[in-house]
Image (cartoon, rainbow, N blue to C red; front, side, top):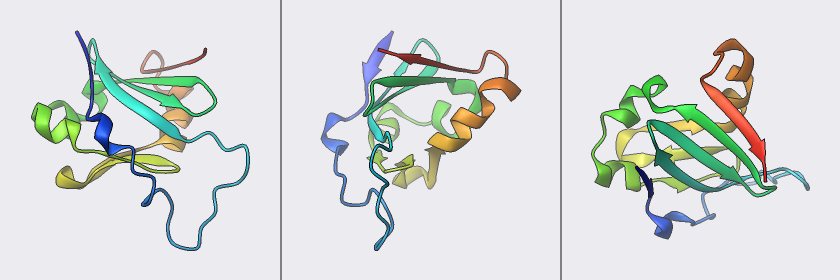
Length: 107
């Protein structure tokens, strides 16, 4: 079962700390959803990152309403009510160290 998380959360105002510019060509998160026990993140360049939901118990144990309350940032996706987030660089760095836990694909 796949479901999109709150599409109203595409507010980019809090995307980067004040005074921080995102380098040109940097892929940023544009969508996130939970599908078949995975968190799937789509980046602005079409790349898709997929990580097991079980690696993030704080998100796995959250209610659907809490899961839907997220903010897309330049380098992460944050769940303010849960005081947690997923860092894009962390997910990418665990592609090889967590064999089978993270997958990437280009559309």
